[in-house]
Length: 201
Ligand SMILES: Nc1nc2c(ncn2[C@@H]2O[C@H](COP(=O)(O)OP(=O)(O)OP(=O)(O)O)[C@@H](O)[C@H]2O)c(=O)[nH]1
Ligand SMILES: [Zn+2]
Image (tube, rainbow, N blue to C red):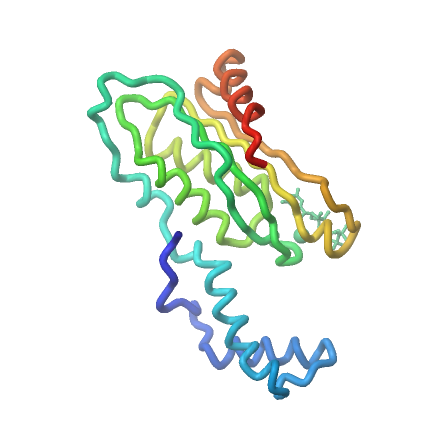
């Protein structure tokens, strides 16, 4: 897990954000001073700090530590079924899903947890799924300069479940293929068969 932020706020003080949450509670018809709600603005602030911890983390930095003693390993590396929780930028509703992250290295490999950390950092920002998918792939491409990168993301969007069109069970699938995954149908096919064989969903 990403460490909890100790500072943050980005120019907004703790009392200011708690007052904003109190205003929302009043707006829905609640009494923010009643016993059960008195600490809720503070809890909401701490929850938001966790949901959006990705703004104060640098995903490129996470990938900078690499290993080169891999005896010429140049096959596909795939981390499957990385769980994440994000929030959509339109409704601030949860996006709950998994990511499959693959790459074919060029001399250097990265610790596998770092791939999951990159997913985590971009997920913990306001997102749309297409951008989340592209950001994960582009960052791996930019820092590791591998032969190729492939990312598939599948997620349920709670703005389509608990509000709006009210559709449970529909998930959105997005992908971004770079380098050999884009150019070679065989390589892409091998990656997608590893994604499709994964029953962790
Ligand atoms: N492409 C894409 N759309 C998303 C994502 N998350 C939420 N949306 C959609 O963003 C759209 C925002 O549409 P608007 O019409 O501006 O908002 P709205 O009136 O609340 O729309 P409804 O959800 O249909 O009630 C909705 O269709 C959402 O389903 C995402 O990750 N990618
Ligand atoms: Zn939404």
